Amino acid sequence: MAFDPQTPQGVVAALSDLDYGIAGSERLAYTTAFLNATASGNTQLVAASAGRRIRVIWIVVTNKDASVVAFKLQSATTDITSTHDLAADGGGYAMNAHPAFYCQTAVGEALNANLGGVSSVGVDIGYVLV
Image 1: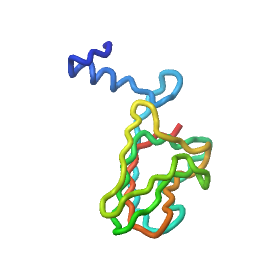
Image 2: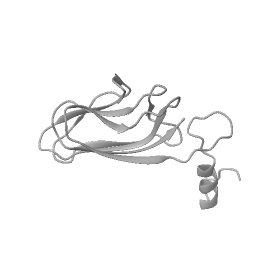
Image 3: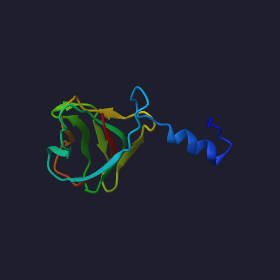
Image 4: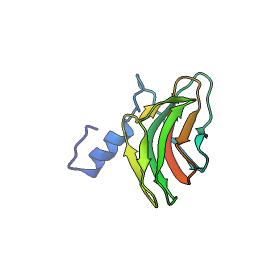
């Protein structure tokens, strides 16, 4: 069915054809992960998978602490997003790059959340392994 934004059926048909940046006809269901990061530096969000990348489709980040904290995602120890300063008491951001992707790790590397200081930051993501 072709995409027709005027009908719910057209939107559903378009969503069912998403490929998350994968060549060919392979379809992937995304997985979700949650982390409550509290330590400064790296905290593993998704474990490495041999021979595969972790491709982040969407992310929601919330700072639950009373002070501003810097946040970024890393592939092992290499930055894969810019640093976001999260405002105190509920500051954060959300990114939905669907149907493409927000960022991805190098092959075989873990996805880490990195805090610039001690805080309490909730991170929710949707991702696929490619």
